[in-house]
Amino acid sequence: MDTSEKYRKKLEQQLIAAKERMEQKRAELAAITEEIKTDPTRNLCEDETALKVNKELSNAIQKYGRLDKRFHKEKSEFID
Image (cartoon, rainbow, N blue to C red; front, side, top):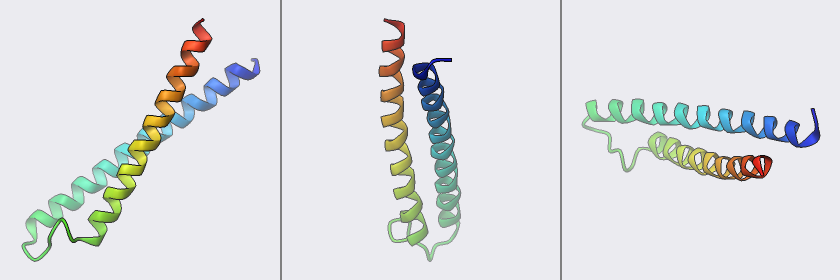
């Protein structure tokens, strides 16, 4: 296995891990949102936990997007 193939495999593993983290954060935020909906004393826009998880989700989405873009760029170079 040459270096470019190893790099592609590593990039693919990173992409899978980033997608899993993104899905985990999305599920976590959904659970918090449901929790807040049932508690009239809490406000989604002011809840520290929800804001923190939302920021983590945003970061995870951005990371996944960057890795996906890089992966597809590398993949197209392998095909050429």
